[in-house]
Image (cartoon, rainbow, N blue to C red):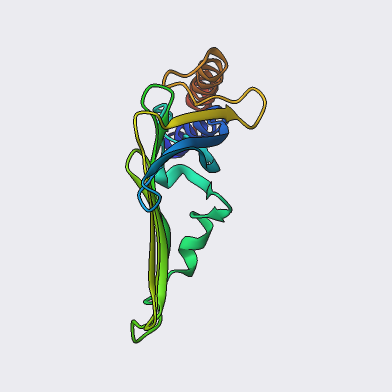
Length: 196
């Protein structure tokens, strides 16, 4: 039993040592503004995200994020504040070097009677939508992605990239050293003189 626990601990340590924190800044520029009835080439949605590709598959997913800022709101941190009248969350998220960046975030609120409220929703590749309502007036603002919408991304931590799916040589060496250590430990344990 001790050998299984030791092997599992070494394997876990090897995996965690391999995982790297990724931090990226992004900017989407150029949207079709429905209310203005025109393409706005200077309109921007900026943000950043941080996370660890814990499963080492090269894809950073919602459960692996530690923060996702869109404009100034952290949609990972605000999720804990959600209740019956306020919702805030990164509803979906994926990022990899191969498939790019895709996410959906939302923040909505209303009073218990549903008379006052509003929200902000962003779904990449589709739409950014803001709305407000009250008994006296309603407002909406729609920004749509187009073929001319441009995504720029930069790694905000020097030298970080998305974690490769295949472990690098140092991770393999650490795993082999751990397995070798377990083998030596087991061999020494079996060579002891046992009373009997």
